[in-house]
Length: 178
Image (cartoon, rainbow, N blue to C red):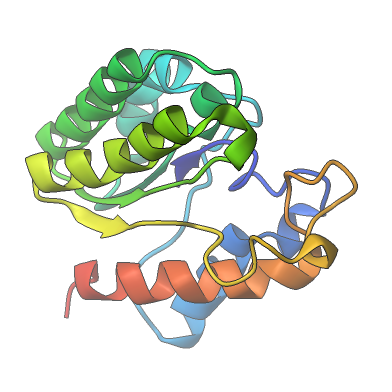
């Protein structure tokens, strides 16, 4: 798992986060995988690009779940560098022999219709360009429900984590070896 605070269980006990729940599911399903959570709260795509090689060398993953870009968007950073950074992470992950699941994100409407639309489209464009598995929106199904978020209105609560895990599981399952 290579992501930001949404995957690092920000504001929660690590065991409550969706990545830990995914690891538990893999054990229950008797899948021959373990989960290494290399997510860092606050990380941008540029910071992820700078550390992907070390993470790949350390963990030697069969699958990389890539969940970065939200902090780029929340900071209003230009989208072309974000796409280049995520593309480089995908390329390096593949070069290391990993399959990739790209996780998309959406922004609140206060960033303006053009930026929010282009931000959302960036993930779909990357998935198509690199022909990787794609989960369009990590928070689908509850993003509009205020009670599913911590007081910062950004990070999902413990109650939302199983919903996220289920969405990721559905996208990840086809990548798992038989």
